Amino acid sequence: MTPREAQRPTRCGFVALLGAPNAGKSTLLNKLVGAKVSIVTPKVQTTRARLLGIAIEGATQLVFVDTPGIFGAKRRLERAMVAAAWSGAQEADVVVLLVDAARGLDADTERIVAGLKAAGRRAVLALNKIDLAKRERLLGLADALSREGIFDPVFMISGLTGSGVDDLRAHLAGAVPEGPWLFPEDQLSDLPERLLAAEITREQVFLQLHDELPYASTVETEGWEEFKNGSVKISQTIYVQREGQKAIVLGQGGRQVKRIGARARAEIEKLLGRKVHLFLFVKVREGWTEDRARYEAMRLDWTQ
Image (cartoon, rainbow, N blue to C red; front, side, top):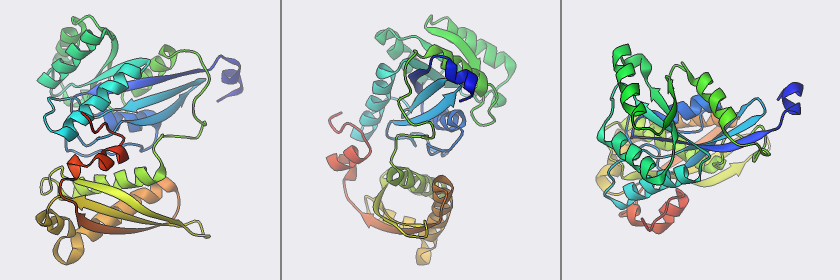
């Protein structure tokens, strides 16, 4: 914060990022914060738990709530993810609805709009991935959503390239209430390093295995040992539900899990800014998606 900004009243508020699965919420969050605090993969519903990303804009601290995508959930894990998303919207000072401009107005987005109306919430509309949509489509989509009567204003952005993101962040900085900052100036997320490290490894599981492994996998950091030279030894377990899935993660001769570990270690070192010794184990835990303790670890409500 500059000396001039320090003389202005500080602002601080929560901004919920809502959207259909794969609308680009995590990519946008990382761009808004200026650092990687949420994992990004081509798979939908990558984000499971609600997490906070923290950014400074002048005298304002913006606390972004990255939520799971909202969709027609059926299984317990899916219902818990959607409940976490709506909870984030209810508690936020400002809601941003992120819409994939290339995909347009789909059933999931319509469901979110209906939910916002039912809750009496207004929202900022951000049409994302504008680099993938023609101007006529963008204008038509903006007009159609503006007629819903709950959006003000409308931004056209690309979370990937950063186009329009600075304007969106500046608007949000003026929209949150005056008040003291809630987090230290250098804090980027509310997730503990152990959980962030586990999320990075889960990202690599998704990226390296693509469609070979379903969503029935999770990663837990089970060991964290600090050394005097500043390095850290991290032990993690990748849990799957069946022996066949374990074989997929391990790969022939353990080559696949070594590849996952190498990519994850490099990303974790960037996050922590120090040398990391990463050890990965793969275990079968049948029915983990019905295990209350796993939901608590992911900060999700098991009762949904």
